[in-house]
Image (cartoon, rainbow, N blue to C red; front, side):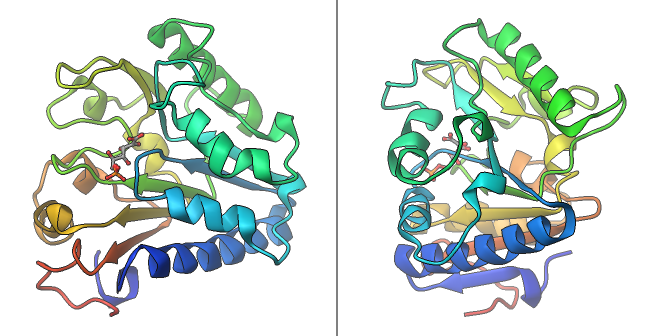
Length: 249
Ligand code: 6PG
């Protein structure tokens, strides 16, 4: 359910990033205190870049040795490619903090075809989380973006990936996209303890409105409804400008 407690409309990118760093600090702190480690799945795109930079610059303690970073999705390109989510995160965050290499979990798209990379990533997740065949992982935090068409991670409107109910990770080949991709599936995202959407810019206001306000929307981003976890929308004033529902401003 969307209500005042989970929609935050902030002035600009910078305020969104500061807010996200605070969220990261509290969610990671709570997870580490509870079970000894913190596991996040992060997205690419333009919107979270400033947040990742600020995380790297954060002067407080974030216990990177107890933090594991997976990817919500990835494009099937080399990590040096400008479209690589791992490449972007490495430059903005991972190479700038004291995190063990073994705590970073890129999708193995450089070594394998999209289908095999998806199978391997699913195996990695099953081993990391110690899952039985019917279980889904419980990420402490999944950070997602929203495309103007309502996609999130690499789950595109009307694509097969959004119907997946059993697999944790699937390969995606979608006409309009330049690269094949690999993405976590909806049941994985919906098993997380915290899911945070970041959206900025007036061009996102209509889709953000639909995702938050239209009860029967079938857009992929609207299908994100954590079963037991918290769902938060962190928007800038442009992305939040069409909302009719109450939000924290
Ligand atoms: C990616 C994403 C994708 C992204 C949205 C929003 O790797 O590109 O996972 O789902 O979050 O397309 O992207 P922007 O933040 O650039 O608007």
